[in-house]
Image (cartoon, rainbow over all chains, first blue to last red; front, side):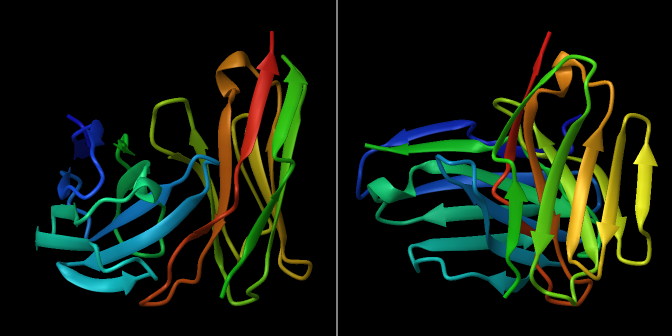
Length: 112
Length: 113
């Protein structure tokens, strides 16, 4: 029973394509996040949703659009993929914003 | 905004020795400091956290200390084992409605058998 599950685990695609990454949590948490981890392992927040409401939107290009159909799901859609989008994307959830996160296992996106 | 620095970036220790990772933060309003361990090919996993009303917290072989005045906090791992080898991240946040957790750049720990 995976607590935070992301699909796909690997994604290889060409520049200019549009792709989506899905995330689901079965922990009953209210808050979900997307983080980007670059090649130097640096973790940077992209978005945060609380009960389907967007509460954090960092300086991320408009090509990235999160969607939360319900509080257990937070998907990430990326339009017009660029080489610089290559990274590992992590979904995470927390019971509330003052507690630790539970991370998914990540989606390694490679844009060629 | 908050900035978290972490040192060292890489650390090698002999099995059985202790390892210490140090972090500093810039925002004096930060009051929650989690530590995460990331093994190869996996997502970060919360291993211990500390809040600003506590100076030290221990859980078996790991301990965290917090110096609010100096805005420093540290992770101590005693009796290291090969399975402790991983990347460790410190982080800081404020417990407000719109806080975000800011991560340090990570420390790659290698425990040599």
